[in-house]
Length: 199
Image (tube, rainbow, N blue to C red; front, side):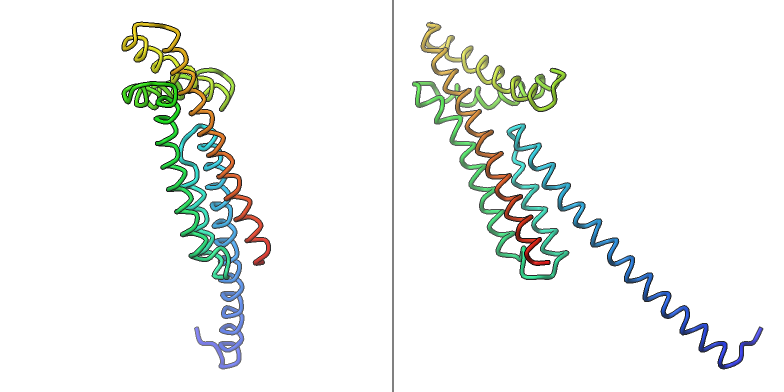
């Protein structure tokens, strides 16, 4: 079937315009999905921080995705680098906090390790408590306390100092969770405000 020159030109113009609209629409959908992923990463990062995991890394990944999507000056690569630095510093603070909490009250190096292992075990088993996040946090504190107490009770052969050292481990774990949640919220707020201002 042959088309006249005018018909072929009209068809070409129609499909060309249509393709441009589809391409533009697809571009907007993909950008929108990208930003949904950014906010999903931020939300997941906050939940992980509440569970004493390194949620700051997910927020830094969200900032990286936002920088790639935006093409604007914000968040930019300096913001991404800053977020990665903050995530590293939070992890360093976490690793030192458990040891500090135990050592400050006269505990051993093994008790510092017990605080970490007990916290992770308690976090897992605390998930069986039917209150999301709260159950995990309660489990983390109980696990940290119990394992540090067991290690120090065996070492010192006395209950009272073992309780004091175990309480130091619990206080350190709580401080780490508060630090992680505060820093993660700050990073998310910085990202949200910056993206809104850049629009």
